[in-house]
Image (tube, rainbow, N blue to C red; front, top):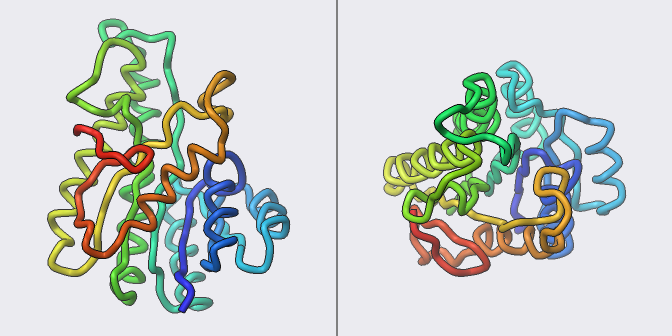
Length: 228
């Protein structure tokens, strides 16, 4: 039976490429996006295994409506990929960071994932061996963190903390929760110079496809564990 997979921010970039790769493998992929027109076009280009879902991760009503739509159309959710991210504040330093930018990064990189996860959990609980994959970054690794991108790094570290906290809570419910780092990828956020989007998406796909006995509360990049 094909898995039902929801990817947020899937109308472009890594999210769209991940949807393309998973759909090619036979999964039913739901492209969640605030830009429904863009998601609809992307789904049509990917093929019959892809479906657009109106989903503004910053809006609770939109998230709740998306959950109801998925329940009505598919009845369950096997995999949730929290892919929406932003605010790579390369020009800032921690000592002088604009608090408004830090708050914006937390909203996009942390609170949106929490909001979507809470709304989708009832659907994940209806599946066997469901999993949640939070798209994080090595910049959020406390073990290797250095100066720079304070809003982005701190918000991704917070997402990592949420990943571990949720993984521990849901372990006895058969739902795994892991984090995936796509690496520096040539997207609108990453800019020029990064590796191909297909490689970044493949790094996330590896975590989506982890075997059932791989455990929970892991942090991966290109099939290798990263330090939290």
